[in-house]
Length: 188
Image (cartoon, rainbow, N blue to C red):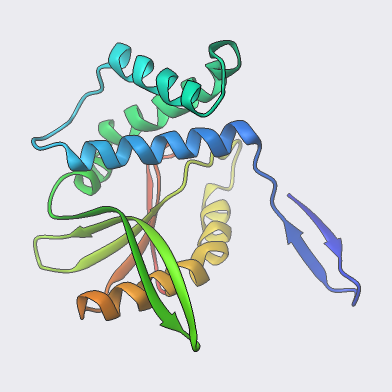
């Protein structure tokens, strides 16, 4: 991340995510959807099967195996971490939706979104959860999580408004970082 002044002299933050990280994020989302859509409880990952499936998905994206190793390692690590985490398993099991595509009107404009996960808890609360496959090296994890919360708050607010109108509920929102095993509730 770097900060550069814009034409008016105010600081504008730029976040760069490498291509490998973006592709790994796409694969993690596919795995999360597959796990949610598969009946029964999944608590472990068949690593060989997951590796072969992930490699097939990468080939379909035009990425050859030699270039895929870092992507593959990050993807499998995120899925394993989520399955090893109690909150991660809670997100993947139970009532709800995965990769829910919705459209709605916000500020007079039609907006289309894809919500990573809607999880309905035992009390009937609807949780909108956005998966983030970013990592954080070093200290000050709380500051990193707070910055990510502020960064994604507008996106989650949009999701909450569209989903709330669709389901006639007031959803709760959160970010989930599988590689960090962190679940962060976000007030939209």
